[in-house]
Image (spheres, rainbow, N blue to C red):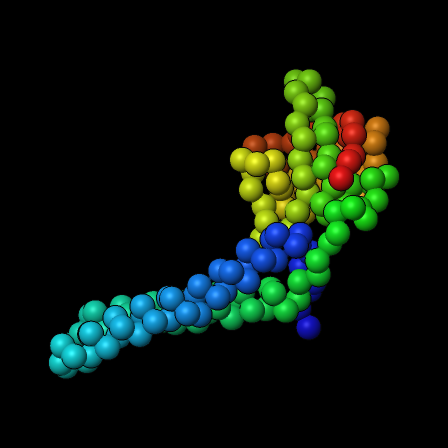
Length: 157
């Protein structure tokens, strides 16, 4: 059994919509490309046919991955998130102790991560470093650019 993937209701719906699009629209588009390439004759030397078949394989792998993610999804109600510690769907306001800059991150699953929107994955270095920590705690996190030291100022929903 796959590990559970924790998602918001919106995040789960987004994955379901993408899966539906891939199953209906993309499968049909690739089937047309394969049929058109097949009509061009000798399949043993037909690069278009090979490319279309390869695209079909990638599409089916993506569909299978999405199906697995959806089947192992657990929807988290943000109203029930405990704010005593940082968990998935917590908004965590932190201060970088080196430069005093404050930042707020919302901890989400990898499928919902969007750094530009302040939504970081719980499996990212910063996400892992914040999980389970409480207000007032300081954490030291190894990131690709080096080590950062953060103080947790606030946890909210």
